[in-house]
Length: 458
Image (cartoon, rainbow, N blue to C red; front, side, top):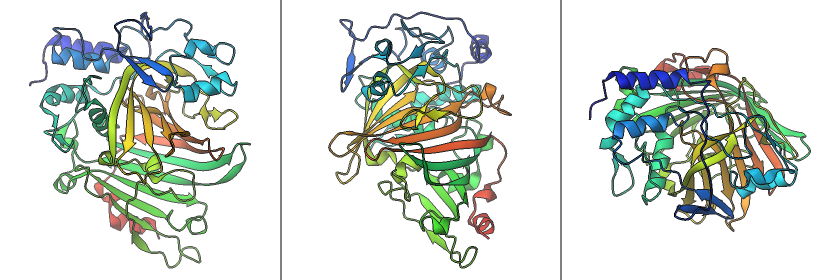
């Protein structure tokens, strides 16, 4: 299928991008129990299915283009929810069908007050949209659930809740969602108890670069393509001295994630050694997504991601939900009694609700539920449950609107500025706050080499 070349297509893209920060309002009547509607149940939370496949007779290109511009005609409106409203224990019922019970409970208890802002319109780049339209109709899943004939763009832009493989397709969409060419982040990660007291943590530098499946083939890295490397990650820990913190944390980390998703992740790290800066060792780290992440109350996969094939995936719903909004600034705000709730304004956005169930009984989680933003496929929040099915942890993701982030006006992906993990069993929270981020700045492939890793570890 060829990319549409008519003037309507350029007009559609340009008009959508012009509506990046401002748009007219539209009203949608939302009822979560109307007769004839497909209703999904997530514990006591009733989801209304929204129609993502487009109107009958609409072309594939039109339907895909619309999926990238869900707020082109203005944000969805729900009675009682409008910009400037504060959802609290006094009026929590206005959000009863817009939040999962695990988060709504914090509002009902007076622990969390949600300030609402207008939905942010953040379409991805025209190149990524064009790549999606040109390639998506050729993409499929093989018998093992692996993507075949994928070239670039979003592999499955039109998800049908009636499709039994829709959840798995959503997982592949999240893997191949546009995250920019490169990213560099300077972060601090710390654990706090329920009183907000600092327990321990560290600061670090993180870098990531993609080498395959670029919308512009000239941006691909031939050597990475030849070796099936989708992207590489580099991390260097600064404070405290890692050797005194935990031996497996490492001083410098390097990870290679392969396009063949079942291929083991290549990982190496350098230990600090004792005394400091002596006897450092380069070690290979076996990837275990089910292991704890250092001393933090997290699994390793919560911090760096997990392979798709280790889970069964199910699409629970395509709907409108209240989620943390795109921050109009460069720093996230977390707080409340449990420390880790996002306090920046939230938004009404269309989301995919996707359940992941581990394939192995020994996994600490019985399931995870992701809330993916439909426009960008960035995760908004995630619920995790223990082996008995009890809610254990909630993870939140904070993103900045590129239009309000220094030096990011040309960026067409959400700017990650913070994450939090609230542990309801241990009554503490882990916070990762990004102090500075740079997207799409050139990074040499050699930056992600073992040789550079050794230089950084000196």
